[in-house]
Amino acid sequence: MSHKPSFEKRMIDDLLTRKEAYEVYFEKQNGKIDSRAESAYASLVKTIIELSIKTGSRTKDPEELARIAKEILENDYGIKR
Image (cartoon, rainbow, N blue to C red; front, side, top):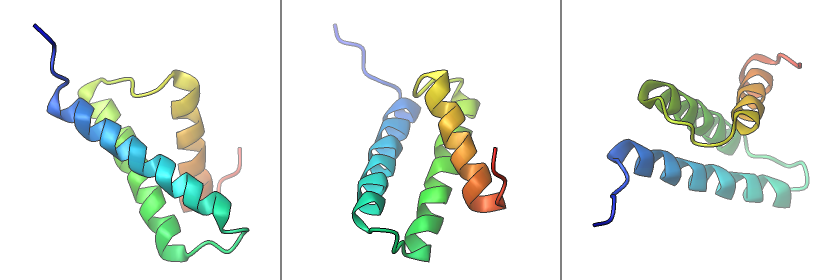
């Protein structure tokens, strides 16, 4: 009998896939990033972190979560660490 991932886990996995697609898009833009795409990406990252915290899920290793948190601080709040 196979174990089916929880709804929350599938949702987080889907969001991570979308996040990676945005990162590929940004890499191809040569510094000309659309502000709406940047805002959507930041929102996506926040949602991934919030869902991970609420579900107690570790979607990635701690280093990846720290990188994501750093991105939020820099993109949304202008805080460089």
